[in-house]
Length: 362
Image (cartoon, rainbow, N blue to C red; front, side):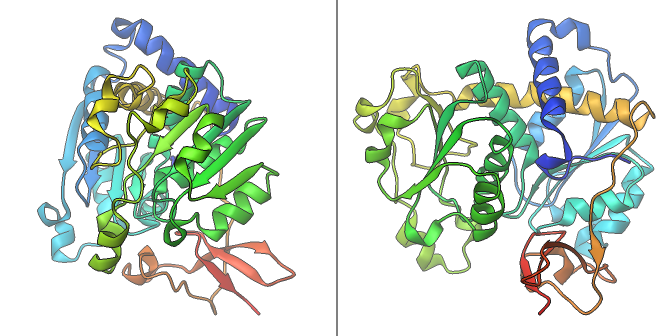
């Protein structure tokens, strides 16, 4: 059964097709009003969410389908100790498609390996958020008219920002995209993104702490909040939370057609006075998120009906290795296979399939 766990589960051509479908939905909503009649979406959200959960629910309802599920782990059988694998098997009996958000990295992948219906990763810890990435790509495409030949700046929490990681991985497959990474030294991009996405794809990128200095070169500015929930020490969050605040003054050096994106929720990293600037696109993103999720639900249900065969992920079982990432689903899910993908055989480097943490075999 094909699912969307990582943005690389879809090819560039498939992403372009989703964007085309989303644009058609925007232009002709009545055409799609009954497309999912009789179908049910299960939203399994183990951590708080407003936009993503309600976006999925609105998407399914506007397609004529129904929604079941839960909005926090305490209201599910997870509070009784039920595993992600068992939950996925149970929900497969009730729904035609599942959207899952979970604080542990790799949980939606575990669900996809056990469910008999498509699973959509709606965010797993600090790892991936592919439907936000699809939302971002649709927004950039609609605002800039293209997804290539762009300079894209990412500002804020680049270490734990799963939306940042997913979007960089997606943009790496488009031509002539330059990346500007703007963050405090404590929140720089993870090494696996730097070396295995940016370097491996030959992308031009720079790292800086200076937002104002980077501003004139940017076609797109992707702001992110410093995420309190990803920090183990409250003191670290308090020290870094106000690192970057986008104001009207800082935008004076920006291009007139700059597109400002933000995955939301916003805390204080974008002044509310910026909202009236025509370059502010983050509330447009909210609308786009619903439409791209409608397109995705339609495509995965189409494939589930046997029109397109699913593709297997490339991984290997390494019994003597274990993942050391405390946020990985392997730390709590019982009897879970330790699966790894070999990224550098000569150096003996593998990465956990669930969370992409580096593990050495030598």
